[in-house]
Length: 439
Image (cartoon, rainbow, N blue to C red; front, side, top):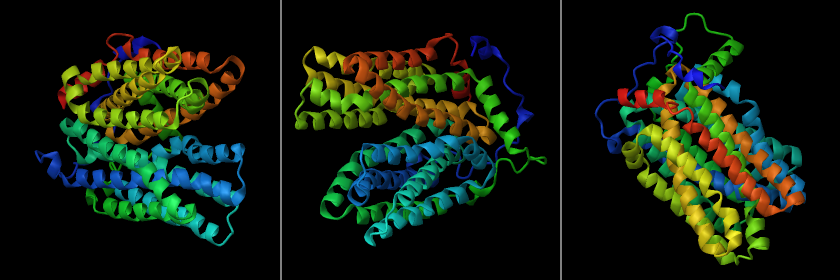
């Protein structure tokens, strides 16, 4: 990936079919923007359910199938692996199909998938193939919905409002991520894990109804104007060509890979490190995780103002670098004052990573042609999804040989190196700045 590609000309306007006119665009304030409000409520609802399931599925595997470490790890991997493998096809499907119908279908199909686990466990008929298949199908549907949502937003929100709109969706997801585990713990403590899964089923029923209320115009494909539809292979090549051409997208993938490899290694070792190396009591460990939620919430609150003050290009660069540098605070905690140092890490990382993610997604939506957005989103999502478990596995393997602290230092260095790629060459983000100025 040479830096010279930053100077390549942009594709001519006729290189792709024009996107249909988005519904409800204009000067409507976001607080009264009906499609965005529907998406925000859906994200708030749907982000709670999977957090309950994240606790319930492993507990079901332990209680009903006597799962050990390998079984629990395999179950987690099956929620991610199919989405990564199928991501190119998911991107093509999102670009070619009717978005509203796709969102409704992928959401409502989750109900029988997750519900079948509840009924199988209740009748003592739960098996490993059933549980793994449910995890794989549910994970694939989640990946498809995530890509479709990122492609949907630019079609219902004007480009000049994409940044605050993405911030609103991130805020809704953050609330779910904070409240979901607590709700899951309470429910599972009161009832069996199997009935607790019905909470997610209810969330999917509500979410599908909210998607169904989105404008009908989303069912008009952006590729309707293409008289000679391409084969799937040609469609994949077209999506990859955008990533090769746009330096920002390539460097986004590189930065995300570095941050997730380093972050995955750090996350995989974090509890073991805090317990065995630092001797943190449970209440301090809980407070450390709470600090991350505070950092995320603060990031949501300041993302729009900070990105506009710094400029989108500079916000992407600064926040990615800050998130990577914050990882060095994890091994630094072994030098003393472990509790306040780890609290500071969680606050800084939660803040920087949240602002970076919002600015990065907005920049991607601004510079990617609408008819290719699904493919670009799916490729980059695959990078983000795949590198986390790879980092966690590599970190655990290395820590068993050289110790936890050296691996944590190396993980932070990998994350910082990935984030640093956004700074070279200096005009790397000129494309996104031009797109932001046009909006």
